[in-house]
Length: 290
Image 1 (cartoon, helix red, strand yellow):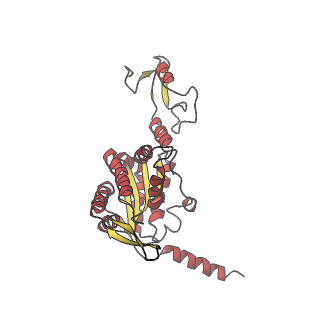
Image 2: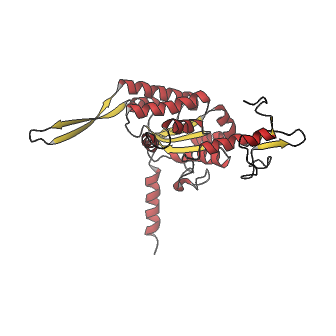
Image 3: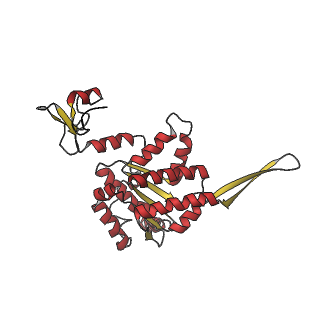
C-alpha cells in the first residue's frame, strides 16, 4: 500500500502501477495530458485529474450497452414526438437535464409511467443522451433485454458478479419497460440487487413503465408456472399459467420502494398512442403524393 495519499503520489509510483506513458485520448476538460493525471515535475508528484473518475467509469461500462438506439439518436426537446407532449411533464424532464450533473451526484433519478406510445421512452432517452453528451457513463436496457443478459451471463466467461458490479457502478442506468414481462424469482432477485446497490451508492436510475408503483410491485410478484402432464397414450402436454408468488411480491415492493425514494413519484403520461398518430399522418401524406 502506498504511503502517499491517493491524490498525491510520486510519479514513478504511478508509472509502476500502470499509468500510461503517453496520452491515450484528449482530456475532455482540457486540463491534463490525456492520461487522467496532473503531474507536478517540480515535486515529482501527481494527482488525479477531474476527468479520471469519468474515464474509470467509462472503462468499467465498456462492455455494457451505453449507446442511444438508432431510432432515438435524433431525439430533441424541439422535435416530435416531444413537441405536443404535456408541457408540465416535459418541463420536469428539462429541469432534470439542466441540473443533470447535480442530480447524478445526488443519485436522484427519474421515472415515467403511462400508456403505450405516449412518449415515455423518448423523454427517458433525452436524459440518457444528455448524460452521454456530458461524458457520463450510461447503460441502456429494456427490462426483458437486461434480464436475458443476466440469464446468459451465468456460467459465461465473465462472471455474473462482474456484470452486476458494472451495472451498479455506471453513472446512470436506464431501464425501459419495467414490469413488461413476468420473470423468475431468481432473476427478480438479481434485479433487486442492482437497484439496491445503486440505492446504497446513490447512483441514479431513469426508468419507464406502463404501471403505477403499487401495480408494478404486484406485477413483479407474478410468475409463469408451467406444469407438465402425461396422457394415457404417453403423450405429454404443458400448461402455462400466471400465478402470484408472495416472496417475489415482497421483492417487487422493495424494488419499487427504492425507486420511489431515488426518483420521486413517477411522471404520468397518458393519452393516445403517438406511434399510431405518426403512422396515420405518414399515410395521409403519402396519399397526397402524385
